[in-house]
Image 1 (cartoon, rainbow, N blue to C red):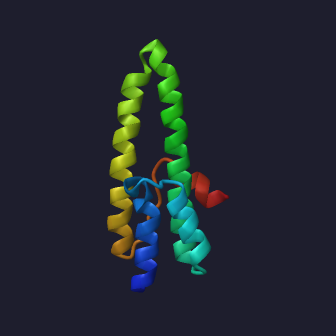
Image 2 (spheres, rainbow, N blue to C red):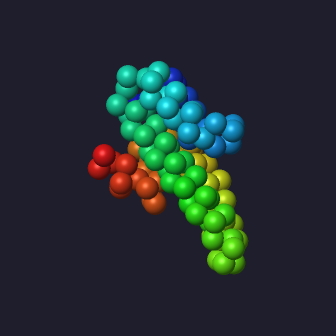
Length: 108
């Protein structure tokens, strides 16, 4: 059973994208907590948010060949939906892993 502090720190890490500090929030959670579960969730959030930032940059560059517009829409939708799912799962006490970047982050 997760404590309220663990749930709060995990939610903070995943909520960073909605508060305007997408990469800083997981780093804060990593530095503040000594719990393994919180650290893993913060790493998951950090990896996902870095990947979404890179995908956004690539999509903006590809706008010149017109394929970037649909890619940017998909990246925007994924950037909103997946963190919401992560927050719901973590508050329920489930160890959430992002479907896109989770396997890569867990190996590191």
